[in-house]
Structure formats: C-alpha cells, structure tokens
Image 1 (spheres, helix red, strand yellow):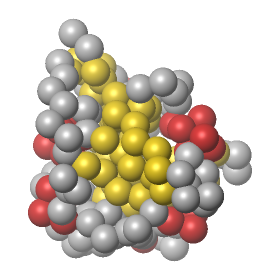
Image 2 (cartoon, helix red, strand yellow):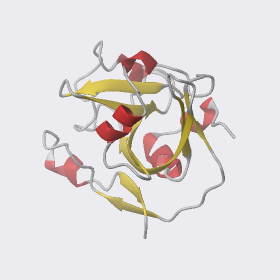
Image 3 (tube, one colour):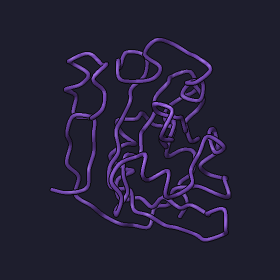
Image 4 (cartoon, rainbow, N blue to C red):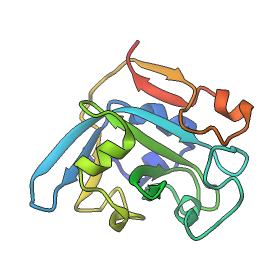
Length: 169
C-alpha cells in the first residue's frame, strides 16, 4: 500500500525509523519497476539542527524542506551525487529524512545512481508521483540507531545525536 501524505505529516524523528523496512518503488525510464527495501535513514530536524540544510534559513536550494511533508527533496551533493530525502512535518517547519540505503546498495549516492533518480523528481508528491513512491508491504524489521554520518560541518552535539536508523539488531 502506497504511503499517503499523512504518514509524512509527522516530525522527522518519528518518520525516519518507520521508513526502515518500507519499500521504495521506482519506475525506471525504460518502464521497468524496481522495488527496494529501505534499510537506513537519517532524520534532520530543521533550523536548530546544524546538520540540516535549513540550519541557516530558507534558500532556493532548501525551499522544498519548508513545504508540507509528503514530497521528495532531491539535491546534488558535492556536485556529484543526487541524494533522496522525504520532507516531513508541517509547512514552514523544515524537516526531512535522508534515505541513506536500501538492501543491496551501499550509500545514498549509489542508490540514486542505480535508480536514475535526479533533481527532475525534486518536489514530487510521494502519494501521487507515477515514477517514484514508497509503499508499506508489511515488512517488519529490527532497528538500531547511531550518530549520523558525513556531517563534519555540524556542531559536536548534533554530530553525536543518534538520528541514524538502520535495519539490524
């Protein structure tokens, strides 16, 4: 069953662990349908979170984070890799969840490359996009937490927060 907007209307710390075990569905440009189980996510909690793109306020790049939850936020990292996020929470409260990994992949950049996910899908509505969405197939997983990775620019306090959620015990 496709996740609806109300699933993403909650804060990122609630949504991030619940996305682990959900199924990312991508209709490839050639029509092939690929279904992958999400195995790792990270929560980003808005302007007070120095690891979040919204930390320094609204910009053209991070504007999707300020929209109501239920859309994809896809951005180019270091000019190399597209990264896939879901926007969560209420409009004006910039929060998001990075989909770091799916079973069979290693890292968010490799994931988007293999699935041909680019900025063309930025701001796509998760509940209605015909090319990319998330389903709940009833898969139950154990979840572990750890500090987020790749955020050396963030404050020591924010780097230490256990806001990375992974499949496993």
